[in-house]
Image 1 (cartoon, helix red, strand yellow):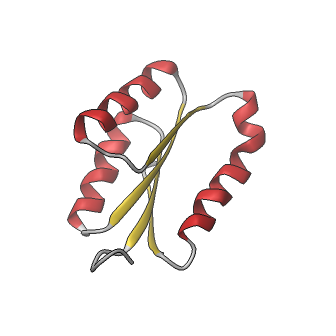
Image 2 (cartoon, one colour):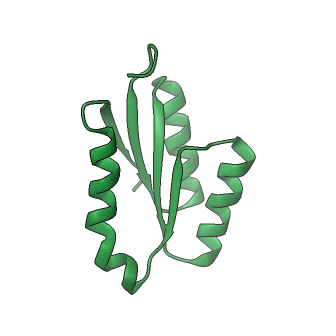
Length: 94
């Protein structure tokens, strides 16, 4: 935990899902780490702009590609391992 706030991992794939994830994390008063996998450059750009505009710093934004499909399990595992013992909630935007 960080202070009185529990950690959470938020997984989504579009700007709308990102907004929903941010709202849920704020409502539940958790310290969120965002892991976003976008289908298109437009979605990725929208997520990056939204994160920047809202001042979210704990986020990783990826573009779905052949390379990403190969390394996705390892990346998600890495993020989960970093939060192991700290994260009490996982939010899915889908």
